[in-house]
Image (cartoon, rainbow, N blue to C red; front, side, top):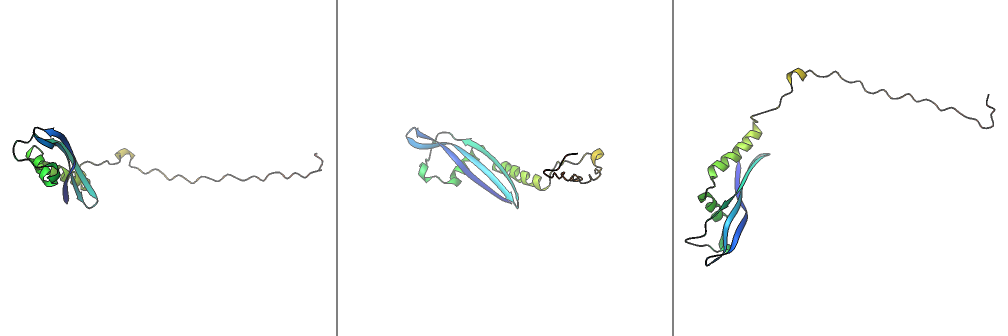
Length: 131
């Protein structure tokens, strides 16, 4: 199984104290795939204004922002477990739909429709007396 975390969008405050372009929210997504099966979880994480070391917006990395998310309430282990469970539920569904037991008898075959009989149209000969 492959698990991939991505940051889809950053909400930025143009000015916060003496800093510019301060990230206040990150929208994240966790995708999982195994063969033809997939699962996903997504959410947002908000951050407090910076109070120590500040990384300029243009120097941020996706890994750095993901770490901020994990440090601010995004439970990486639980999210990955949820995505894994989504995939496992597709492989081995915990609930299935069965035919109703009283309706499980196959219906008798329906005979094919009978084509209509073609009737020849009467032949009319001009200049013939009608009797």
